[in-house]
Length: 139
Image 1 (cartoon, rainbow, N blue to C red):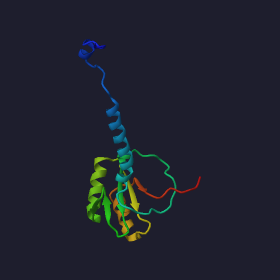
Image 2 (cartoon, rainbow, N blue to C red; image 1 turned 45 degrees about the horizontal axis):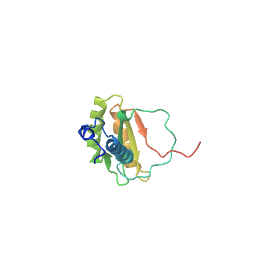
Image 3 (tube, rainbow, N blue to C red; image 1 turned 90 degrees about the horizontal axis):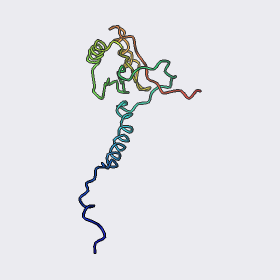
Image 4 (cartoon, helix red, strand yellow; image 1 turned 90 degrees about the vertical axis):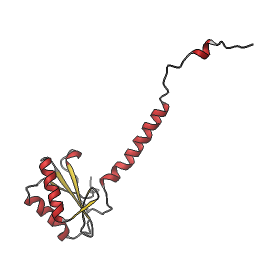
């Protein structure tokens, strides 16, 4: 004696199970939250102490230039000489006049490695410059 009818076996499921899709979405979200800060700061450096930004700038309008202790110039983990860096920054500025150049220099780097970047920027009319520092602990 069978208690269930054959009619129940013929019914198709019309609902979609979204639990695996949500699991995948949450895993991807966690991966992006963890890796995004790592992509912005490509080399390990200690920034000098400083203050807080006065004005907020759109992330798409920021180009990070990094100067490490040894005097290497990097943009997006790519090394440049000072002349190549100047050409790259001028072409980026011509493509986006709202561009802000954020210079991240290690606090132990020498002035002779850092000042040429600022000098080349000003010489080419790029005056929207931000110097990256560690936020101060003042309230």
